[in-house]
Length: 389
Image 1 (cartoon, rainbow, N blue to C red):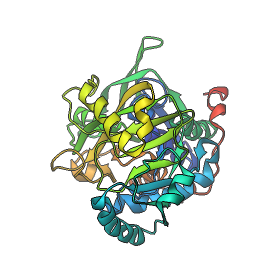
Image 2: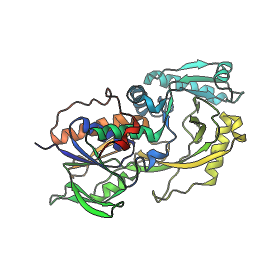
Image 3: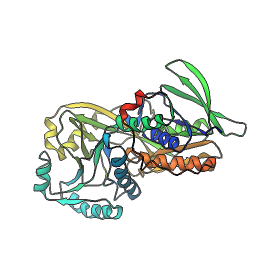
Image 4: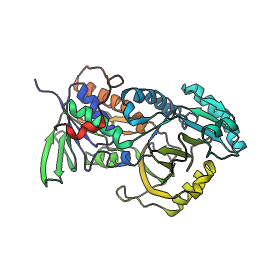
């Protein structure tokens, strides 16, 4: 008896994690991606392994998801994670006052923290603003975005998943009842055009999920919201440094290899495939980052990049929108069977997002297999390109 076939559109974090889960549960899986692995938003993240502290006041659902997945990722893919920890730093009286609300939020979300005096914080991170009033240590971490995705992709590939990279989805195939039965593709590396059929098509295209849904006449309430980040050419800190305040522009500095990255802003664009970088946003990252690390002003910038977040909601775009994820069975939401969308969330929650998506596919196809991704160690990211497709 042949296995049920699932096509996953998108090879970002959610797409490769979903492919991994589906393959572990016995599905035949094909991943289609118009570029390389992490071609879109996933390849442009700052690489923060969230402890949930940034959301424990304004979005506790996301905060709880982050701390739970933080511990799991440390266990199943330690080779791509730097478990360096983080700090939330108060620079003025407003920050100190907010700290009372913040610690209550951490308690509610089971996020461990420890209060540090200014002297203790500066002993750990000498480049911090010497005028800081207090700090809290938290279990943040950092990861290499490409290597994280490749570890999931390599494990999925070892379990039979086929990857079709540099391949555009030009159309969703529909049957006479208006249900999705597959996709039309254009392989740009060979100029081949063909049809692929599947029992279920999963769109894991993040900020582009609304565009894919429109191909089937479906709707996804995604709000693409880009943000600018700036990398500087010295590793000024070894831990993630967060401003102890409500989430705002330029409130985080984190180490990546021999650099630090300051992020991020939040704005809207008309064209997802052309996101301009505003010079004012670059300057804002320097100004806000320098409040946390004054020596940043004497450090050369190494790169400027933008990631487009797929925020979920129908209110005002930006930071007021919840950062958690949503999985849509379009049979329920639009009367279109054979089609599922997963979007929203963040890199830290990629495994959980994949689990919920695969649960939905299993339910649709009458498959009863438990998720094992929280326990199964991932292969080395190096193995992806050595495995046969």
